Length: 109
Length: 109
DNA sequence: GAGATGGTTAGCCATGTGGCTAAGTAATTC
DNA sequence: GAATTACTTAGCCACATGGCTAACCATCTC
Image (cartoon, rainbow over all chains, first blue to last red; front, side):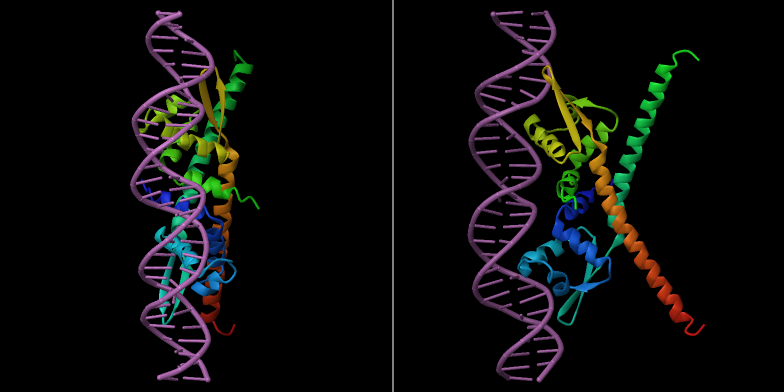
């Protein structure tokens, strides 16, 4: 099983990084574009980008002196899938409980 | 905006904790039941349960000497919602790009 | 080619995380 | 009431994380 779910969830467990993801959904952007709205030194910010990239949520390419980042949708889908699967199991359980409760209310058919 | 997304995502960024969640979808369980399959000292394991609980993913109640945990579905839904929202924005962007590409192929209608 | 621009590297710091052992408490059981 | 069971607390450790400054390329621009 894909246990890079670890790094995917970890990457999303930070508001700065989630903001970067949201920003990148609007289209690719350079490091300094992404950095601008965040009140944080560049090297600190770069660490966040590094985590996003090593979790596979983002890819980057350097042309000239600027590095451009763009989003990679698949890993986020993996995280969403895990959550959706859990939710379905949970709903299934609720349904079974409800069926049980109904069966108890009407003891003999 | 719900910035306890931080603790929710962080709570899910660990395989032990995800396993506990999966186990609890099957129904409530005591601390030692949950602990049994994990090769880890109890105090270490308790820290994981603590994170799940303080992220609101799980609730617990102590009766007698045993503590029973059960899952709380809502916070996981919040995480799933965030992801689903991002995915929709992403798909929307892809659609716009595709529309643009088609418009460029057929320059004059 | 000097200066500005855009990133990168190195290194420091405080705090958080994930693991452990040892010892303690509280409820059950015999 | 002694022993067992089921946690809990305290305290330690190594390493990761999230922030910083300072200094260093590399590439445009004038």
